[in-house]
Image (cartoon, rainbow, N blue to C red; front, side, top):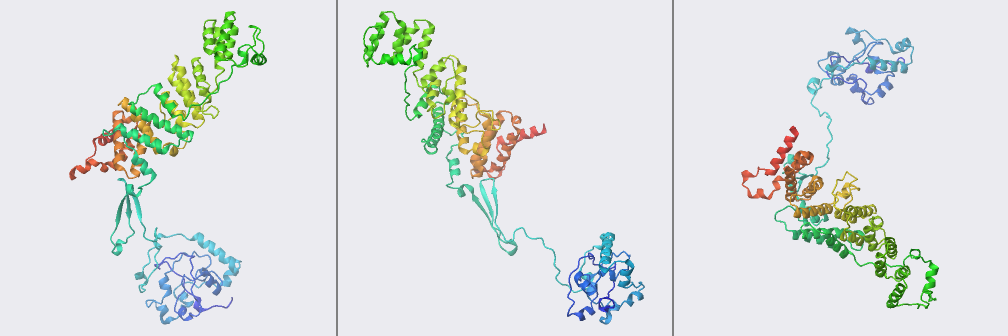
Length: 610
């Protein structure tokens, strides 16, 4: 490359006096073939790519303008370097600036490239890299040099300059959608008001959009809130009967259990929330499709003092050593009683008891043993119970009367035990002297059913035992919502049908005690139900639920449930304009709020101050 010195490529270095600050190492390619005439009248510009410069000169462009070891923090004015200005006489006539111009301007002439390479002891590439690293370390950012460059400062004609544009979030106009508090869907149509198109906003009713959906029909069919003054209990009974006909599959055990809960609510509603054990027992037996036949069996041979061989020998018509007669193979009832009497003639009461027990004369045997010693009576009674089937409800009754938890309470719900309802009917209709034993037997039966997945049946037992309702987060509570297990996910637990059934049960209790309420149910689930009503376009009905919850809170202490009170206020403030009473008020009175909302908000504010 020695001797390749073209005057077209020797240009002066930029100075700090230039206006347009360029970053040092950003290079852009400039065409150099076929436009030599243009380059003769064009100074060196910073936009020349590093590839083109290296091809032409073979060294870093900074080396051509800055002596070795000198700190080069120069900026370039691209507009002044690209075009020949009449204000600069050294470029007049289109002649390029020669290397002598540096001497004329008082600047020392820089040494040749080969001399720089030789003095540094590096090759051209190594020397270039060392200078580049040193330049980067010595460069400092000067905020005064980063001013905004304008065409007026450059003195060049106005041309279109590319300006960075932030990309649009949406490339095309689209529909904006939001939900209103009054059960409306708000649509902003994709018009262009800047181009003269009128803005277009549509309001749609969610009740109309969701028409014929299962969820909306389920909400509309319920006559809630059930605290309304114009509500009659016939409407509630009709709703329960419709649920039995449409929602309960009587071919399955779970469907029959669910139907039993709805029938219990109908019974409570008809009797104003009161019932006795016999009423519930009648309901249990009506729901049974058929009466199960419990097979009887002979009493155990060892209970009456005979082995199986001795008993079989007596059944084959052999000689009776006591009477000296051969008994017939098949005896009539009269013959059995006559033989029982003959044994008593001879004073053989023990043999008479055995004969009566073998031939199922339990009345004779029990009466005779009751006039004898207590041990004999207990022996006959045990023999009698051994003839009953294990799953016979009589076994349940006798075990309960004997002061024990019945076996059915521990084993019901299994297919081998059959239906659980007859056993519960026996427990409810026959109260023993020990109330605690009866209560434990019913609760144990409910726990057994719940452990086997029969949630509706278990909750029926819990209601009969007066078990209180608990909370969803407390897994030790036996029930939180009637007919739903609180050990599953909340979305499956708090279904709309379950909340409606729970509200009917609360309504039945209020028929008996007007001031009674279920606090766990009021805390969460009525507010949740009100929110669902608002989501499905029924704001007026949702506002009525808010009023009912607020009335309950005001009767109690709102400070005991601050979060609930605040949530009720927020929802009511959004729904207050959906009150049908506002349609009858003058225009100036529509800004008024219900008294219960004002009072509840004041209580919340007072609690926050505390």
